Length: 385
Image (cartoon, rainbow, N blue to C red; front, side, top):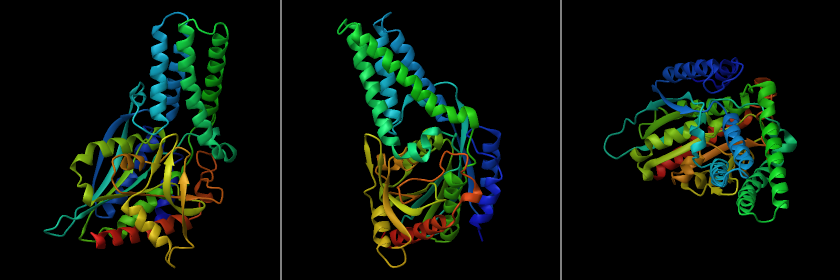
C-alpha cells in the first residue's frame, strides 16, 4: 500500500526539483518508479520551457526597459513598449503568453501514470489527478508580509506597465514635454526595482526544497490514485507536471495536447497544490485582474461534502489570488476541476517559496484530509454519472 509519508521522505531527500536540473531528472525517475509499483502504465511527455519565472521576468522587464529607453530614438520603440505590456498582461493574468517561448529554452518533463477503465459498454469517467513536482525559486515577494499584498502589487505593476505605454505614446507625439519624459524615467526606475525584488532571492539562495509546495500535492495525487485505481468505472490518470513555477507551463502543454480527445461530459480533474500547513481549502476563485471562478460540478460536490459531519471541521472554502494553479487551464476550457490547497487563518500558504519549506515543517493533516475528500468527491461523481 502506498505510504505518503515514506514517499515524501524519498522525494524531499533531493535538495530541490528545479525544472531542467539534474535533481528534477532524478525526481522524475523516482515518480516513474512509484507509479510503476502502483500498476500504472507510465510515460513522460516533454516540452520546451524556461527553467524559472526569473527568465520570463527578465525578458518582460528587460524588453520594456530597452523599449522605453529607445522612445526618443525611434517611433518603432512605442510599438515594442505596447508589445511587452501585452505579453506581461497575458502572463500575469495566467493566460498563455509567447514570452514563455523566448530564449533560453530547456526541456521539461511531465510524468504520467494511466490505469485504463476495465468496464465494458458505457464510456467510463475519465479522472485526472494532477500535481506539480517542480520546486520554486526563493522569492522575497512570497514572504508573509509580501504575500498578503501580492495581488495588489501585481495589479499596480500591470497598471504602471500600461501607463508606460501611454507615456511612450505621448512622448513620441511630443505631448507634455518635458514632464512626460520625467515620468518615463520614473517608470523605468520602478521596473528595475521590481525586477530586483522579484529575482534577488533566487540569485542569492537558489531553489526551495519544496516539501509543502509541492511534494505534499504529489503525495496526495498518488495516494488518491492508489485508492481509486481498482475502480472499473474510472479511466484514471495521474499527471505530475513540471515547470509549474515558471508559469504553469507543463500543465498548459498537457491540456493542449489532450483536451480535444476528452469527452467534456465525462472528464474531470483534481489539482493538489501545497498541502503542508493550514487547513484544507476547496478553492472557489483565483486570478489577478481576470477572475477565474471554479463554478463546476466537481467543486459543487466538494462544497456539499464540506457541510457533512465527516468534513465540516476538516476543510473550508477559500480564494487564492497569489499566483495561480495548474487547474487554471481546465477552468479556461470549461473542464470540471477541483482545486485543493491548504491555507492558514490569514488565507496564506506558510513558507511557500522560502528556504524554510522543508519536510520537518510539514503538517500532514491537510494532505490526508485532501486525499479523503478527493476520493469522496470522485466516488460521488462516478455514482451520479
